Image (cartoon, rainbow, N blue to C red):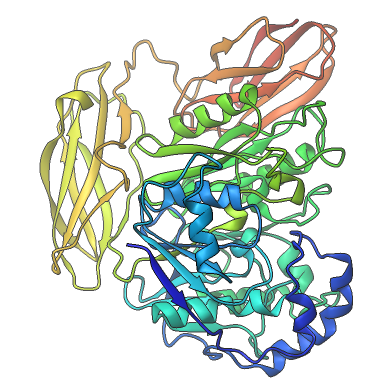
Length: 594
């Protein structure tokens, strides 16, 4: 049911904010006239104690994006055609809160024929009339945090790094409407400047950002009230968001990403897999991305203590074949989870088919939907942002938390395959089931999991013969009656592993080998298949016909599916060699560029 809610924002707006409230579209970066507003905005934020300005009363956990959400927040400020498409798909998954200044106008737009036609209905759509400055809700809206992992839902609001006081106050307006307490890092000594596009959490105490968070809270920051060291920033993130000491991972800003937000080139797909954008060899921000990725994968493990898996997705160029800084920063990593749907920015078919395929293969069972962000009438990507930048989820009030490290391929065809999961709900867990099959079309069989204590539940899939592919998921029931599955889209989506033949499979202790190379000959993107399931580090290098190094394509532990991507579009026509190195040796394949 459509709800129209007039709402007066609960804040005192300084006189300078009237200039910031003008309806001229505001860019993702600072507008030229906004530089003069920074000092007054900073001082007003220090003098306006909105929300709860003391740390949460006990340990907290910051939600991961792939967890269940009750609402998706957007602001009806510009790019209405893109927002309409977001509403069309997101309202099938959860409530969509549209912050707007005229509910009747928004309703009329949603019901007109533009951008996909009228919505069939406005069920699950809430129109909240409240003041705002811009469309970039990812950056200024609050993060969802939970006391004691799964208890009370709270909203955590940082100081917004733009002099846009109405945007900065929106968490208070939406929090009051939803009756969710808002905690605010606005007052010294706990003041912290931060932005949602530069933050990712795994849901279990690990977070990622660029070093922009240190710059903006350091001696050269423009919006901070007090200067913070990195240790002080980390301490605030621990006390207010549950990010564990040593687990706040910060990367060098990219030279051509003018907002320095990591959501423009990377994304956590789950606790142990990173989706990372890939530029052609040596171009644009590619070298720094590779350096950052090497730093992350060589220095940090996932919450399970295992290396992060990396899934690469091409960064598409402009129609003229250019990349930043000579073109807009096009990316597929700027996508957003909305429960069982993933909304992805798209640009041109020849690149979109690759980007969407990679996401669909990496997220089986999810409804992966592309939304054009390069349309001449709605070219949001030229403003250094896309789908993720203009959306923000609010977690459910009673999460049923399931954490599981997926099973790897195995050579064991004799013993059962143990499955463990960490499961919690505020009312306790009454039971858990392990569902498995070797044929998803035939359905899944259920096995009971047993309580091991410490919120850990265990079960085992029966041993299967060599050559079998096994699919499985976990279901848990709370004492309250709430039922949850993981993956969130099960049984349409699942985890899977294979029983390999130890007599014929290449052992990970041997030299790495190519499984496939396609297409070959090629003109642009080449998919290199390495044997899946390797746990040792490899290096994939591209050499020219004389054996000279052209580029180091990959360095680290290969992704679980064994696929690596090479973009040779900018290389001269000719014969090249791909060389795969590992601790125990090397292998090579010839590649022809047409």
